[in-house]
Image (tube, rainbow, N blue to C red):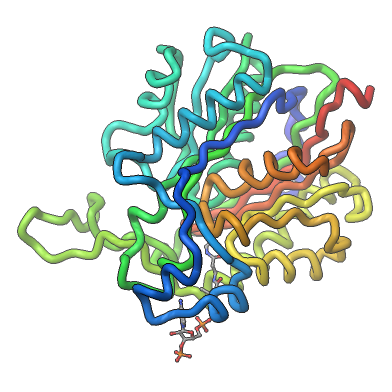
Length: 340
Ligand code: UT7
């Protein structure tokens, strides 16, 4: 494994790792736009036309991020035909953890019945692809499977009265089991960050910068400058996708399926258009899941697989963008053994 560092943030490494199983954990309750419009000054028409979102899954009061993550992890292991004893690391990508301390991954590992290394990756909506980079490297050099889970309960961190943010988000988890496989290709990757203006998308208070005392006012909710985030999302996902394609020596016509971060259908349309990819090759699930942050890509990937859109040997491009700012993209070959 050697890195090609023509671009400082593009990792030319192609890991001999494949996704052996996928699983999802979605809360049973579905909330439609009309249900939100009964509580907020919004409408189904506004939400659909601005975002493509029609509904979102919302966690029950007793459910938290680790519950959704454990369900997804269990399903992914069953899909891979593996047991928890085959897993060497549990990695949870989340920006809506159960607690500030400890991380969510150890809780998920315990729920799955293991004491292996378990830790969180917080790269917001870019978390799952970032997790594939970290988990892929571990799977390539370790001696077993790595469980990478993107899991969020975003509806708990949005202000219920902030229509501009609340309507956008949903809850859910998606998991992938990574296993070493000499025929497989996971990469190249392009990852980056720009933390100069975190206030574009953040929870202002409640961390160590501005702790919230039990009696004091503070703003713990997710706030977003939507227009700024929209522009950055398009620019960064396009540049990052081009970076991995250039590094791999591939063109857009070599991409069988694009699975982008599902924040907004208009953002995905703009990315597809600027990249010059056939829109039919972009998988869209934002209509049914809304924005589930780090869970959006594994949920969309599992949906694409279930709909028969991932053929053996398919070249898949993943691209994500989120708070931080952060971005992460990679290529992977689906089911490489059958293709060999
Ligand atoms: O996961 C990564 C992070 N998130 C994203 O990638 C999301 C990025 N941003 C976006 O998707 C879009 O910017 C939004 C969907 C958030 C907003 O779409 P927009 O076309 O940029 O609308 P806008 O922000 O320009 O708002 C237009 C109007 C405003 O009213 P005024 O000021 O023009 O009178 C808003 O107050 O729409 C109003 N508005 C709403 N109206 C009805 C904002 N939210 C709502 C709402 N229902 N839910």
